[in-house]
Image 1 (cartoon, rainbow, N blue to C red):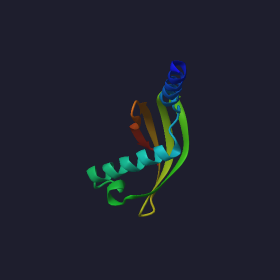
Image 2 (cartoon, rainbow, N blue to C red):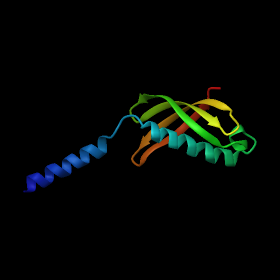
Image 3 (cartoon, one colour):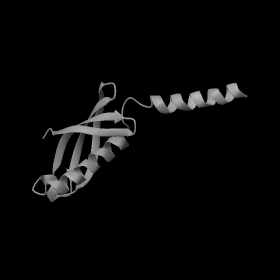
Image 4 (cartoon, one colour):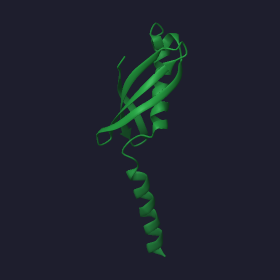
Length: 105
């Protein structure tokens, strides 16, 4: 009985600890949209402050190093402006967070 309980606990720990090496596209999309929402409030004169993000399209996600990935995406604003951006994401114990971003426009 103890062996069964220990094996179930070990399996549960392994499945949660390993996780994916790349963020899911939906996770990347949420991170990008959340960032530009905060960025627009802070920098009202920027294009992201004048118009809100309408749509985010993830083009590709690549692994840079273990726990680091880069995501390239198109960000469409409500005024029809489109920006190509690249986000560098880091995996922390609590999930993915962005480290830096650059405008490829």
